[in-house]
View (tube, rainbow, N blue to C red):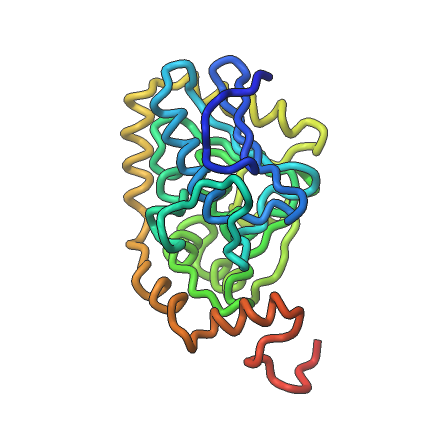
Length: 264
């Protein structure tokens, strides 16, 4: 593995090469790999980079420790040295469609906690290779966030009944259940994760690239239109549940919509 000198705009993402395969490691242990706007945008830049640089043919995204990615940093913080992303956590910043439509294969090596925006990255990768220790969750409604991407894509991956369950209950599931319902496609022993992710990249790279691109285009046509308008209007509203949910999270209290005396 060799470090690759390319500026992703944040010190919390690291690029390394392994032959024609590029690894992008999410590495922000002080915040459990929570993704800042610069990190989201940096992952998008990594996908563009692997598609533009002839040295590389595939991208593997992974995390550090026991966390792949828990989603966005609710504080929306920038860290010292980060290059600011385009204003607002909007389509221009988020990497999800870029990951989905990448001509170069994108593999997620899910090493641990994977939820919210992190789970979207894994789901929209060509293959998600997951440690047996990984856990998954769609927690947006717990924070008052309308996630338009999940509403559009989750039913395609797991069916309507499972999508309703995961979105509306925001419950956590383990790797075995995620595999059973079709949320992800491969579960491996934790110690074999990197080797198995590299194997998945190698398998895809043995297929014909032009034909593969057409197949991916046809697969991507199955997704519904993503209603970003509703999502971002809600996030920007001064009285939105998103504002209350994020404030409650930062203040380590329950949001005000939870009924008193609710059995837990």
